[in-house]
Length: 177
Image (cartoon, rainbow, N blue to C red; front, side, top):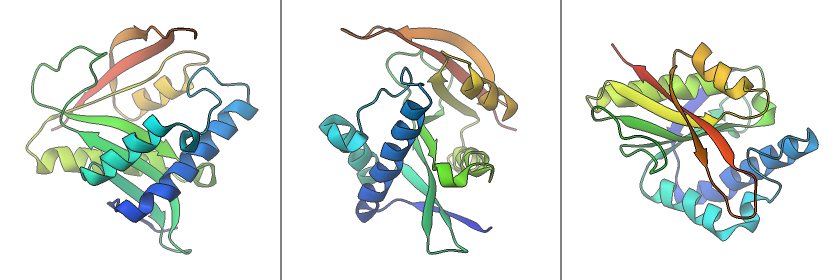
């Protein structure tokens, strides 16, 4: 399989949202609704706006299967500002504010390839710190996967949500050579 990574274009938004809807469905089918809930991204205008905004700001990259018909395998969104709910960085950073892979990409290391692209982009910008946050509840497999990709845990945090259970997260960081 050959994977191509490219900047997302406005016309890619619908495909990205369909992929994210599929991930919500997959998580819900496993009873893992704490991370992303049960509502489709396409049914939530704020999430549609978030995806379209990231694309418009040229923050989102897509991983596509070049051997097929350009099937969308995953996305990563990169920003130079972290989320307000995590501690500020000790130095300028590149922040992975979304990393998601299609269920069709399972076992193909698409997430690892998107993180490799994230590291490369940080270096191109002259940054040596790459940070991200992830859901740290449930079985914590996601957290463990990021650690296996070379990230170190920085600190846990909790997002308080009205009418819903608190959302436990973990801030992770990686310093680049």
